[in-house]
Amino acid sequence: MYSEISYTSDDGLRLYARDYPAASGAARLPVICIHGLTRNSADFEDVAPWIAAQGRRVIALDVRGRGNSDYDPKPDRYTPVTYANDVVKLAHDLGIERAVFIGTSMGGLITMTLAVRKSSLVAAAVLNDVGPALSERGLSRIRGYTGKGEAFTSWQQAAAYISGINAVAFPDNSAQEWERWARRAFREDRDGHLALRYDPNIAVPIRANKLKATSLAAHFAFRRLARRRPTMLIRGGLSDLIEAEQANAMRAAAPRMQYAEVPGVGHAPMLSEPAALEALRSFLASVD
Image (cartoon, rainbow, N blue to C red; front, side, top):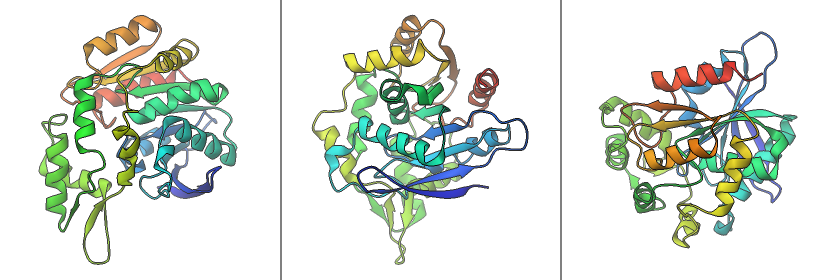
């Protein structure tokens, strides 16, 4: 279904991405999917092949420090600017000059950063439950669990942990879905021990108070993105990170930005929900 890509960052880390080939048909702009803070490329395992079936190549990457990508020995480099530079390197290595970006949470912040640092690369963008101003309520929840380094000895324990920190956002998830999520989030070693698939040190910049609710730079990046190219905000109807206040401010700042809300889920939609798929279908159909 996908092939694996390994590439080297400008500072020497080996990074990873999944490459889903486009279905046959007229060539269309590829899609680059970027996951959230503690997540990895497996988050797109449902939506990426769905997009590829519509005739677009899809690249879903593991940001440094997550999934199959190297951990950074210098945790202060775990920042959107560094991540954006890694995306530029990946696109260069693959010969991609322009792409549609789908960024979930942190992935959306990286996309906004790219709109400033490598504007020509971003042809269009979907911001999944993220923007230039974030609710302190959601940020506090995220700070509370990031980087704790939990480890378990059974998939049931791992699923219970995932449910414990995410049930507020996905109240209707089944036990089967929580275990599926756990298998995306944890890796198993030879002794059967399970550990989260990210470097606990990604929390170092957060503990240094670098994860802020808003900034002038973030607002500038959002305006640069949403006013100059097709952009859509997808918001979880129960989101505690992009609440109605933040969503309304984004729509006022970028009146041409498309907007879709996914009912019954919070931060952040998996993008496989019917409302999300319909929004993505419409948006992608409008982009070459």
